[in-house]
View: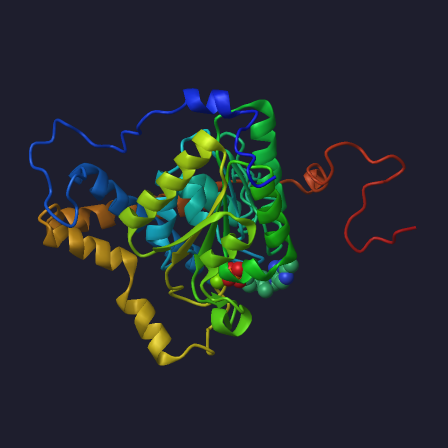
Length: 371
Ligand SMILES: Cc1ncc(C[n+]2csc(CCOP(=O)(O)OP(=O)(O)O)c2C)c(N)n1
Ligand SMILES: [Mg+2]
């Protein structure tokens, strides 16, 4: 079966071929020199804007949690901004995205308004999941963010199934499935990669290797710590990229996404970056060595990219300050919107539990007797 490379959807997929503009604008006079040769300065500044928005948004989320405005679990993308923006830039609006629970930045990158993302964290009706999902369960059909999953690895079989559906219908969409390093030891990882390779399904699996699964290092949990190599067990293409480099992530992801679009071939991309804070907002990360914290700080992708743009003459201090001020204002406005939005009415508590009514099942409140 390994040689099966033609797909039901391949004809449609071939039609969808064509170079992606990636924001290159011929009208711009000054072409940037290395390391940004061939890039549009405007697009580069927009990447910084998006990365800064994620940074400021996550800081406000952490604050909202300590103010008890946000309940449940809350995991932040701090330190992963370049990866998130690079990956999301590689997708078309019609491509599908599945993520783990560390997904606020992905929701923003998929184009969801920051107010709706924050409102979901605040458990308000204006949130992406009407306030019933919270931090780990963002969902938005329109932008094709199909969750937000709290069960480690839970998103993988679903993403693989979505890719099967795309293939079955002969569509040209690609599915991206994000996960953490710790997820590569879950059975569903191997089951999903196996079937995706065997059936040639258009899904790009992306492992965010932040060196830690909660407090356990990759070296302590994975017999093969170079995680992209796991793809080879399924004759799948695998590669590793510097997750602190937004351009490198965009290039690798775009290549693999377009390859999946054209041929259906799945792939495994490993993006390596540091988690700047604890596993979740309540984790003081006492298990981390000083060196590890220092390494994370000095690789900070937002600080680094800002400095690189200034160094390359594509941005000045005032411009950088303005990007930051706007990102802060957008995060603040998201908080205000969330705070002013209504809580769901308790009568709607079970409305989204089952797709259809369950025969003979009265709707109960938690802790009500079963019989
Ligand atoms: C099936 C399952 N087992 C255990 C957990 C508890 N748990 C939550 S996050 C996590 C670590 C996952 O690490 P990784 O995949 O590296 O993701 P990261 O948090 O670093 O983004 C664990 C074990 C869970 N949510 N689901
Ligand atoms: Mg991890």
